[in-house]
Length: 342
Image 1 (cartoon, rainbow, N blue to C red):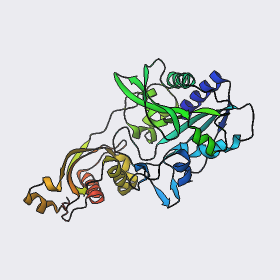
Image 2 (image 1 turned 180 degrees about the vertical axis):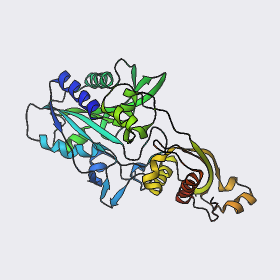
Image 3 (image 1 turned 120 degrees about the vertical axis):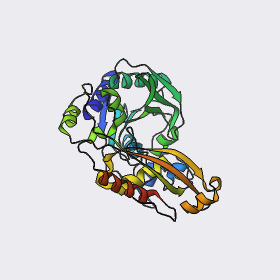
Image 4 (image 1 turned 90 degrees about the vertical axis):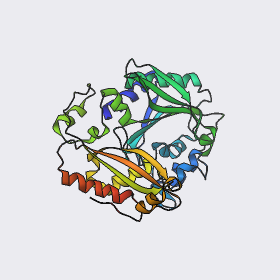
């Protein structure tokens, strides 16, 4: 992952002739830095406790490495002749679905170009996108679609064509004038570009890795492949074990919030879960009377049918172990008055 990031930074430094500054801080940040200074509204849904890991009312685990940038930009106030690439990598903390391409604590990098000129344009942004894509996935076709970020102007989502499908690689835009102004930089004199990229996704695309859990696996057959950017070599998978469960949860719950609860409950065994899919969703009102009584649902709740696929990377599971994990997951998410344990 570090090799891939270094190659992206080298490509941008070479193209621009810019200086490079690395920013690395604690992932515990003020809420103000993660949201307010980046232009998020006070009632933005992303601030909800369902999605944000608050440490206190004013402090949180950062949800994106963009939280490092407003304070970093303050260092340029009063300086002249600046053209610098700010590289801010690190872990971010989210509530996310459980499947082969998502993890609750992913690595991310923000790549922001700050310039002592107001002339940064969309052409500059497209040139940056081209360099990043070509470095991460040489020869890949790419496209952009408009997207809105509170801290950028002209935001774009970058998709790459990989094995016949369009997949998101990164998002970017020109730094919003209010973000510059909030860091003491006059937008009439300063401008720049802001790009954020998930490093797990980038590495999986580059190497053709089929399961995000492999990036942190200790199995020697897998770990040895993570030292280079050479294409992924197939490793025989252990058998999968499937368990279907019927649970009652609040109507506001989704795959992301459920995934977070499941990871926390399983602890060190979380990497055993390959995926959890919602096969069916039925509201309390849609259930028949006998079904409501059997499940113990109330107004504001839904009945979910979840499919749990357990597939350890480096060991096999007995039926009893699979059942025990099934019960841990059931207890972690089920809010009904009737328990159905194995």
